Image (cartoon, rainbow over all chains, first blue to last red; front, side):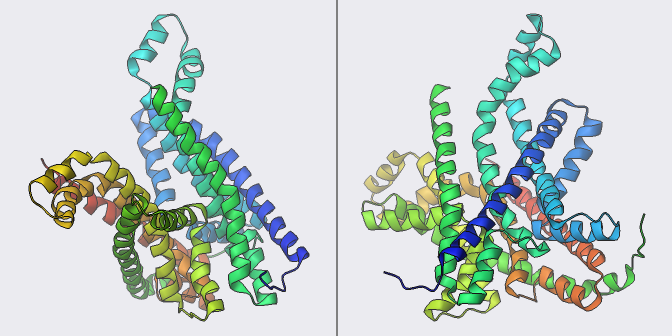
Length: 217
Length: 221
């Protein structure tokens, strides 16, 4: 048996941190997906005058390190005197970051629906909205869901970076315990195991869905 | 609304130092890609091998790299390895962490790529009298390279963005590290980091742009 001076309350502290990680992930993914669907539809079907500038802005979010986005947003909210808590800043930045990736997923999914299918729907008398909700959405979901699951897991992992702006999530809480009991390898292994246990089953489900739906095509 | 005066002049004066940091950033990213690619090819071959231990080792590496945060992997190299008497400085720890991550992601890319090349080609190569290694080098690799080129471009952009995590383990010579040093001296956080963000953006655009150019030159036919 491995000897350690880590106590149950330390583990509870880390699980608390894991809860924080999941909470941030939830808000970021919820907000990011909503924005991503709107932006994705604009990118796929909107006019070039909106689509290209939007694509340019979202590309910036994907080309600048997330850590620097957190730092910039945090100092900007201080400059602007918004008095936002680190948690709000963290969720907002991570949400926008998610939306940048989600937009491309949605755009890909919508464009994957054949134009002829959509024209057929319109010529059968469906309105534009009905075409979107009854034809495009179900077909596009198949193309989008596996990458969306991958995105969610990526956001969960990237949420570790909020420790820089002072949120105590899973990785930061394990760091706090390390400074107390001085057993970095063991404590980090526990943290890694928690991340793995959250991420691995979901990534398997994603891979399974991808395989299953490809067979149906 | 803004009870704050922006001071851009000192930030622009720090530009040479930051550009020097950018070179270190690129250096780490390129090194981690090169070492990562070599390991990834080995992992991809191992995951298709007949030895159970090789398959198991490869899948542990790949799944750990893909299912834990990159920052966790850097922490492991920096703090974790200290427990077993291996003390890495922050540069090496960052490089090790990113390389571990790159290798895991690239291994999956290569595995997919290897599967896309019909095995009959290997058999044809072997029956023409080529050795196992020359078949791999002359027949499989050139086709594999074409398939994995685009995912690899993505990965190097990821590697560049990941180098910014070095500052969390105390690296002060890469772009983010230099910026943070300037920041703690002056507390002009927004100005300095805004310039750093622009430099990162330009680096990633330069990389993707030249990759697109290279692809156009290389894969003409």
